[in-house]
Image (cartoon, one colour):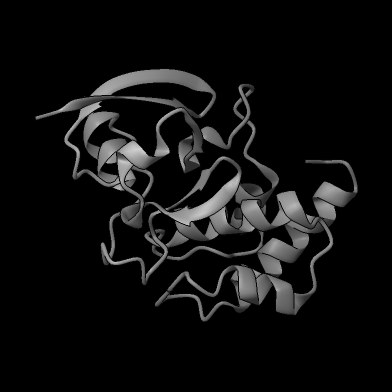
Length: 160
């Protein structure tokens, strides 16, 4: 039996009904139709479903939707500005070739955004640690790391 769930998703208050066993990932994709968050392994191992929950990166497949009641959720769809400009991390992934097929990209971007909100001047090792739970079979990670480091510089320079 579906129960009411209140979240603020991408800055917009939302109230809808979900089954008690739904993950946050399933609620976002199936009920709110925010399909930018990808469903990969559904076991918390691949990171494709990473979103920000109250500002912190989480694998949304492992979070019960109702445990996030009254929380703030940011998905990949919520990163671009209202003016349509991409978030600095998104733009850096485009500019520096940090994306390939795109399946892992939303999770990598969200992990990077979570890191840069906490630390706008990370070391390469800190970037590697932050994205350690995100699997990518296309890029080999060097372009991903380069993209995140470039985004960090943009943010520090006040362009993000």
